[in-house]
Figure 1 (cartoon, rainbow, N blue to C red):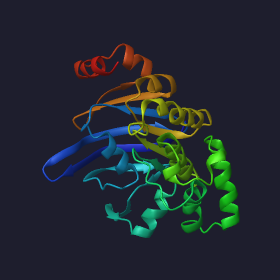
Figure 2 (figure 1 turned 45 degrees about the vertical axis):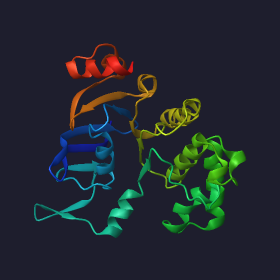
Figure 3 (figure 1 turned 90 degrees about the horizontal axis):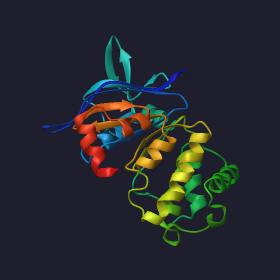
Length: 253
């Protein structure tokens, strides 16, 4: 199976704080990788490095074989111009903890925005595709509602539909349920489960261990900027090998 994501030696610092200390990760096409760990372990920063929202100080990340954020010239890396970087990001969908919807636009208008403004899609076609995506995430009857008229779970599902509207090769989820009331978590996780069943390649930073066990193909435990332990979710959750993993899981399971 081919690799969709290849990260080698990724390091990231903020001032004197080294947040990522050499991350190596490979994600196969169609695989669902769940990343868990305590707050401040570098999980979200690593996701943001994958689509170059954060620029690593060292290491390389390839998505579907393409080097992200840089080009090699004479054996050296050169930062890509913003226009080319934006084109790369089009193939990488990202869903954040907060929904970041346009409050003055309806659900269908939020989903249409990327295809129309970035890809130049005709509005009529973009609207049809957006309505189909809202139906896919269970919100066909909320297409013309504004964000303030939607629950948190519904807003997050609109955000997922918006990311899917760009037809990404890879989806990144940064704790997509952490800002939701507990009773709304399930509806968002179900959408992600459906995407997994459809073969979407995903990296999901999550604190939902049951979801990681059920849906994940691979589980990564991060702490203090490094990958401490990884493997099949059921194995890591049932029989962690590392003391730090055991200590973390004892508090969340």
